Image (cartoon, rainbow, N blue to C red; front, side, top):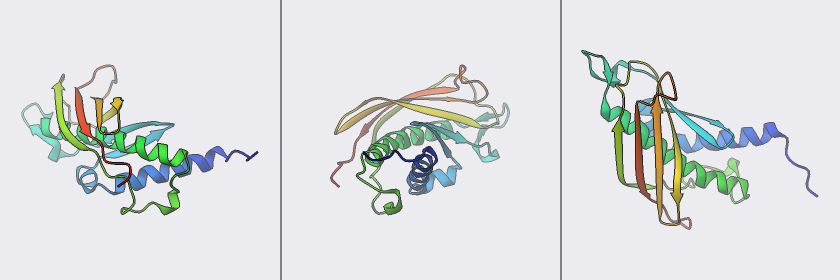
Amino acid sequence: MKKPEPVQVVKQRRDSALRALVGTVPYLQFMGIEFDRRGDEVTATMPYKDELIGNPMLPALHGGATAAFMEATALMELSWQMLWSDLENGKIDVAELTPDNMPRLPKTINFTVDYLLSGLPRDAYARARVIRSGRRYATVHVEAWQDNRQKPIAQAVGHFLMPSRDA
């Protein structure tokens, strides 16, 4: 019987895979969006920048920045779940991950955002939950908040076309 890997080795492998996945999307760097993994749960953070303000009179985060943040969170969650599955099943090795052999990103079919509160000039956080994921189609729910997760600033539902697992 094979001895289980030390937990620190598993954590490092998973964190490296997430960093590699996020590194393949230049838009995430442009927006400053970061991802943190705890177990199989990924939290996105959009650090505050003055450029994200849409209404300087309030001031409030621009709705487009909030929507882009949430869509990126949904796409990364779907991609992370595909990558996580392949990592845990031994189909891929983190050492072999390159931008060329990363899973292709799902394609957005539609994305509907409900703005619940004005985003304040501070960091925002988001988590996505996959409602359904099949071979061709996925549905994801996303919540974004700032100071209190119980008071989301926006929520969204997206439908995505999943990439072929063979390609």
